[in-house]
Length: 527
Image (cartoon, rainbow, N blue to C red):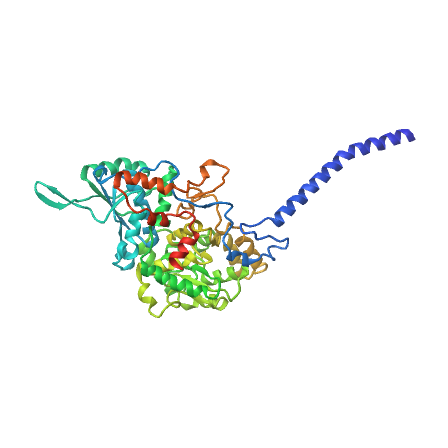
């Protein structure tokens, strides 16, 4: 019996051995995963703590995001022939860009790409400034035209106006055939329908021209052309750059500053259908505006808010910043139109963050004279571009916020904090209904779960203008050959091709405006 018992015990120990080994392995694996999760960075090296993000160092957000070895590069990487000489052009392309400043900016980029696709000469784009801004300044009053033409000389031929033609001894202006292009038209529409009309009439006029070229284009060189237009060719006029410089310099005299695009104007609130927080009289104004400007649709406030369609209120923005760890000494530049609802909505925000500025309160005495209409939006754009941190409070149909996020990504991965309104909505609604336990911790959990402006995959519906990675970026030592940076002499190659058709021109100015490692370049221009 003793021998049998001893044998049984030995067999049992042998059977238990592998089980114990597996338990040990699983315990080790679980411990390793826990360590990794507790020490992993959040895009900027911000460490999660085991106490629910209590120890996050918000000061690290003032730095740029981690580039992971990427840098901006919109230079061509394959054979890129120069634009056609005048006699070989298929005709003239004229466009009218409608909408706000940044919607028009995207339209200008699309117009250049469309001209390249059709082998056409682009007439300097028209800006529909009067209907939106009541501003007659146009392209000539906002952008540096000479810089625009010189920067794109390797890409498209640009004319100031459609030329006059002589037929039967009579001279008259060539009349452009007007076409209304379909929204998000594919490249094939331009190479067939539009090109056919251009060859027939000699010139076409596309109007309106907002969102009239698909953003998803398979040819990466055409996407890089968009970046060359957006981030290099479109430079504001000297007086706008000077005003922006004065504001940025003054804000930086005391250290870091953040910019906030507060989208709390009447048009956006009416569009979103988020009116329940306003007085009955204010609700009537919003409902009337919506009926006059937008398609009829039943919108329920609570449902809209839960899916993240309501703009953040100024107070909610303040609560987010305070929950993240920013204190009341934080200097903030506010870019916004006229806030709807009066001062009562701004009062809680100012109580939390009193160091608040805009382009009317900071700068020289006569600053306001230079910041009206499109120019005012341009100044806000430049100050937000150069701020240490940018926060868009509503990135839905906001071209200003979306374009700025893309621009800041391109110019050195500047920190952008994008609130997830859908994830934040139930947290704010709980607070409003008296369930405020763990409010700040819950907000932090949402706000620190982001890339903070670092390189990341573009996922629909994110716009190419919001995130041009990876097409407009490269790595000096990449894992994939397609990501390799172009040669340093790429503009000398393009210039030699250009000279063979156009004659020798000065290369130095265009090279300087097309540098791809561009973080310091824009600061030289503006600051």
